[in-house]
Length: 88
Picture (tube, rainbow, N blue to C red):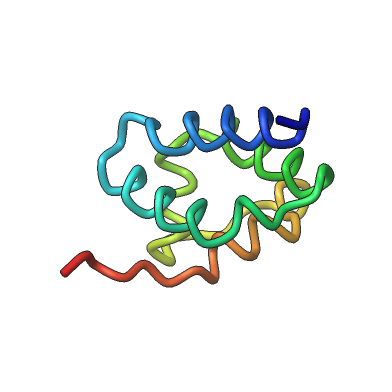
């Protein structure tokens, strides 16, 4: 297992267990769809997203506000444009 694979696993664990159920579900689908394809820079950007308080990220996903220019990244933009599909 490579260092990037270990890093991905740690980020997956953090993103899936944020403590805010609605955000957990959203993040689980997002990481399932994208995390395996992220390079080292994108993984670092994703880790920065995980450091943002849950309520802020959830509000942005719900269209209630926008991140500051300093918080923006390719990964955050990808997260905000991701469309959750409810399990059937």
